[in-house]
Amino acid sequence: MSLSENSVSAHDLVVVYRTARGTVRALNHSSLVVEGGGTVAIMGPSGCGKSTLLGLLAGLARPTSGTVTIGGTEISSLNEKARIRFRRENLGMVYQQDNLMPHLTVEENVGLQLAIARPGQHPDGDVHALLEHLGLAVLGDRLPDQLSGGQRQRAAIARAVIHRPAVILADEPTGSLDPDNAERAIDTLIDSQRAIGATLVLVTHDPTVAARADRIIALEQPALNDAATDAD
Ligand SMILES: Nc1ncnc2c1ncn2[C@@H]1O[C@H](COP(=O)(O)OP(=O)(O)OP(=O)(O)O)[C@@H](O)[C@H]1O
Image 1 (cartoon, rainbow, N blue to C red):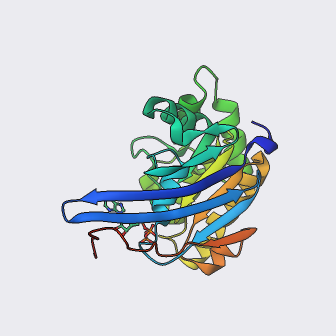
Image 2 (spheres, protein in one colour; image 1 turned 120 degrees about the vertical axis):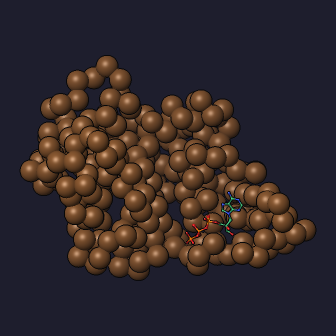
Image 3 (cartoon, rainbow, N blue to C red; image 1 turned 135 degrees about the vertical axis):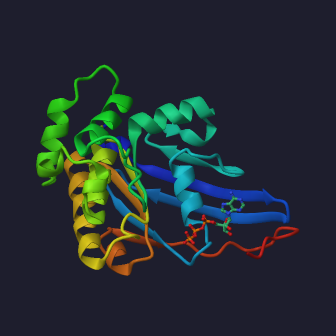
């Protein structure tokens, strides 16, 4: 995908979860547009629907109503198999926990992601080059439990960008890190994003992290107007 095809747009999203105690409205007619190559931070109070929104942008779920379009593809209308494929090829995901495979080295973790996203390619050169670029080459042969928390998260960022995704989605990427490591991780994330021309949407509670984005979107608590609402 080229830069112009990296835009992210969500239109009039509603998500209603059904629980044993009633329904929870997690998003209430939320919309956003992120230009290709842009960086947007989503902030808002706990429970306002930030992770729900990011999950929809990632195609992990479909909205109750509304649409999500990435580049020219309306992913909210794809079936599950097509959404999985789209996600593998076009998106990079970073979470609060690194989710690295514990029995694989850093290099193998990153290489595995490339093999999944771009089957048939020989990834070794690309993986080395990326780890080198991000200052992680020296850690390439270590297992995740031989790394510090900050190093693990930077390895997870390398894994998220190795296949040059059009869009990087990060949910609290610095949430488990101290301020110094948070800064290094966000540097790694934005450096990687710029290197591949991706669009970055990140959810954060940290104003310092949010300030690194081009734009901050404040998500509001949805109106709790369903017949029965889980108050938890
Ligand atoms: N699978 C689910 N079933 C029922 N309710 C859910 C489910 N997932 C989320 N919710 C509810 O939807 C609302 C939005 O949740 P979400 O996790 O998106 O919020 P958030 O803004 O990311 O919160 P936080 O900042 O605490 O991580 C909350 O009220 C939450 O309890």
